[in-house]
Image (tube, rainbow over all chains, first blue to last red; front, side, top):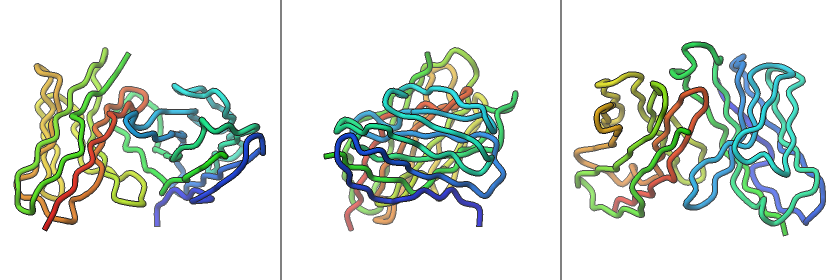
Length: 117
Length: 109
């Protein structure tokens, strides 16, 4: 089954304790992305990756890191989490970024709800 | 830059009522337009899409038409069901996805 898998689904942590949220897709997609969802703000892009070893900042990258060492995995790293990073996080992937990129559908994981105390 | 504005919720309806969620966009290029739906406790799923002006996307009884002249992509369903209760996001894709704030829809039996 084609899917994007995020882990964990729920996480409560304390300020400053490093954490990683994993994301894996089994569709051989080139493009992967992380979003955060906050009430009244919709989804905002944190980082994205157009292919292995190619990553770039989205709209709200501060306080986050990512890596893309393999095509299927795109972990989100919070080196020193703070309470303002309490949010619902989604990983997404799509086939490619080309001249037809605008037509590509993004597939989303089920989300990771993070609380930073 | 690109942006999406959709009507604020929450929206509460009775079963079999007509649903409209307004969505307008600002874009410099020729984006594709999408409606995503998020059911409680789940991730976003594509509901429908339109890739060029005058295209109509449809799925599960929902429809939306890409109107370039009014820069709109309003979502409609003629007769909603309780199972349509969800958060609906309008989005445009022009290199990256830009989302509206989401509209929470609750359908009561």
